[in-house]
Length: 148
Image 1 (spheres, rainbow, N blue to C red):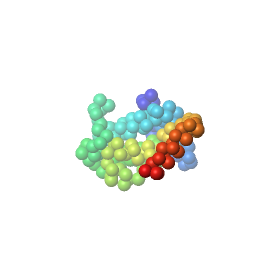
Image 2 (cartoon, one colour; image 1 turned 120 degrees about the vertical axis):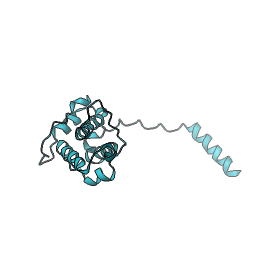
Image 3 (tube, one colour; image 1 turned 90 degrees about the vertical axis):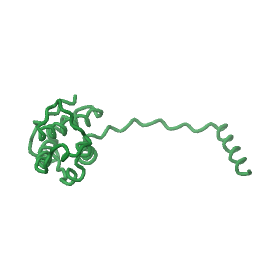
Image 4 (cartoon, rainbow, N blue to C red; image 1 turned 90 degrees about the horizontal axis):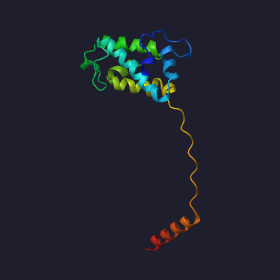
């Protein structure tokens, strides 16, 4: 499922509110699979910039700089992700919180929340009112406590 979003889906940012092909593919997935697909897309872009193979582990909690990225590479990844996702990514996010995990959180929570949000949960049945006996018992206990 995750491999349905490819990093080569580069298109110019849409002029209107239509989704890019990459975002449309993510949105078409089951809600439980969308964040994983976004993670795969982001990881692929970072791996490409770092000249990493798919077999190499990409730590999500290590700074881009510690991984060997330069500010130029970070800007390149930002531009590619903007084209893929059709969203503007604030450069401050990349430099102030420079990890794959934090970038993924930002994309999921701020830029793509409309796509990654899970459908509303089924309404829970209304809680039945406590039987009269239970209410009477509570009233008695509270009265006893108040007198003490």
